[in-house]
Amino acid sequence: MLNKDTPIAECRNLGAASAKVLASVGVECYGDLHDKGAIAVFVSLAMLENKQPNLNLLYAMLGAIENRHWTEYSHQKGELLLIVESQLEFHKKTNAKI
Image (cartoon, rainbow, N blue to C red):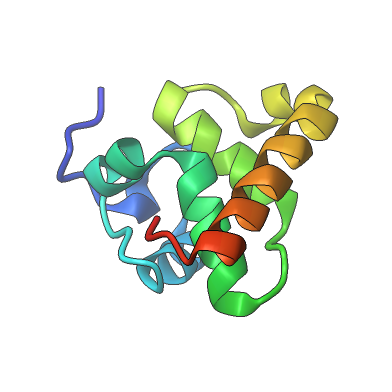
């Protein structure tokens, strides 16, 4: 079981490369990811980079939070994309903080 202070690089499905990317939006440990949520972090990355990050990163973050393998989420691609797109649109229109 992970604790809130577990570094991102030690979380299931995530490693050093993911940790570097996630640090750019203030996610440095499991607690940060868990508290913010995978979709919110993914949207933050998309807004920072002004492009959508790789969906595999979203799957990996969801899996890290739920302690599941990232491939278990690939069948939900359409649903997840709709959620991400609606969140991106909302935040771009309202300049709401994520």
